[in-house]
Image (cartoon, rainbow, N blue to C red; front, top):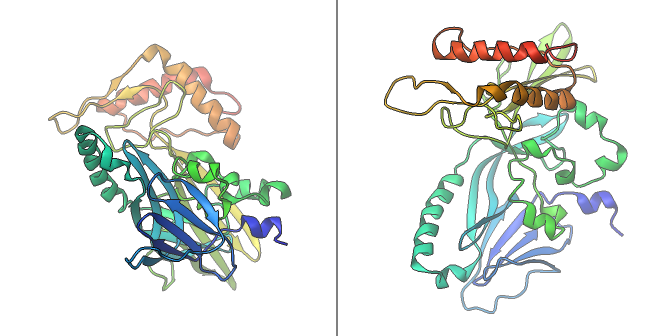
Length: 355
């Protein structure tokens, strides 16, 4: 009989079979575990004992894949997203970490054939965007440890939580494929649910011949001791966007482009972690793109700024404890107005826990 731990362990080696009317994802680790069958007609899912014989004259395509990112639902159908290529780039607390270097998006709903022309046209445009999604960078995962959690939060997990599947331990803010996993979660496919984070993680070479990977740990000798240092940045999934198009906070205090950065130092069996976060100024403001080199900054609903900033910092305090806020924007020009507003807002909410 399988233990709870083995039932929740992610499949690390998989084969993808492409049949005319179905996709079958087969565990290739010799475990004899059930295969995942996905209909190409209506995107329904089920577990089957083994890959069935092909009834068509067409020979099925077979690929090696590293994981299932999830199911993406668009207007006229669903698309399965799988990991086709990875690169091992380092370790997090002793667990191997992989960078996703290639994704594949597979259509699995034939209803598009019977869709109105206008809907087909719109779906074609979405499909072009999907080809861009296949090239998404900065995606990382581990089969053994939850990358969405900092070292401290991993340490604080109770025995019961540690026995849960990785996706159930995950911090939703940093689970990049949270939405795409919903269908697999509904079908209780824990061993196929691969939690993925997006980050822009800096690797610094310090007296080390290691390659300049964006996610890595490097070693440096201090005296006779070896110190392992790992830098991880976790990008929040709320209010993501490009520069100028996504600014400030929403009414609930969630700021644009929020990132949690963790520095982990390990030496002689001891581990130390330092966490800092950054994000856009925590009140409502915008920067409308125009033909000028530096579009103007506009503060929106200034009378709500204190309330929104307070919500933001109360949420930070709840998640991280005491907060020390540092203003990094310029003190002149348009950014100077933002800095002045931030200083004014902070006068009303600073205290022993927020400085």
